[in-house]
Length: 273
Image (cartoon, rainbow, N blue to C red):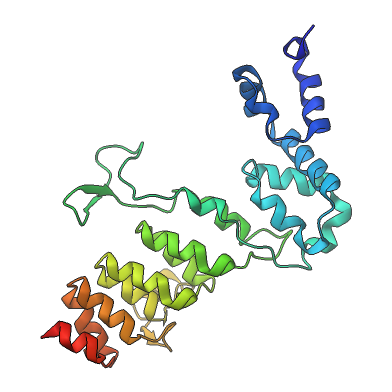
């Protein structure tokens, strides 16, 4: 008898004992078995991994969120089987895992119907527009409304999530992150520089300017709500202006100089001549 002759239930127990992510990768049969495992088993697997690794109390939820198998169903199952730790979950702010954003790429392919709205890309190709249903927005909405934990730190890893959203033009994700406190000034305003390289004035405005709208008003009163100007999220720098000049994004150059009062340095002035 070999390992594959065991019943699925026993294979699951072997997986819990091994707590090795390599086990399902050993053959196609095991991969299919563990891929089809229910959320309750995956929650037990995470609980076992945490128990064996002995992380600091403040890092437990952060570590769980890093596992690729962790989704809304698995996380809810984990909360159900570990009720004794409920008090500690709300004591610490977890990190926002990079894995949720690492695979983001320009939305050139999609399973949505051909009639879905499209927008032209910089190179002449037509790209499908991102929607509220695209990964990882549904899971993020769950994390930021989950009653069991505190909302993750949106600026984790030097604003990695916002930078990836800008790089891929994922406007709904950018709006979500900004609404939860993301700041585009991390790493010398790299998110803004990415938007400049895309030559996307609307995205640059979205990152720089902060506005307050009456989203919570009844539908009949939304039309009466006035947009109120607030302090900008990030100050426009001469480096940003120089990047816009290099990209030949004239509309962004005018926005920085005329609306934001950014004064070009000597190097930028020479480029403008």
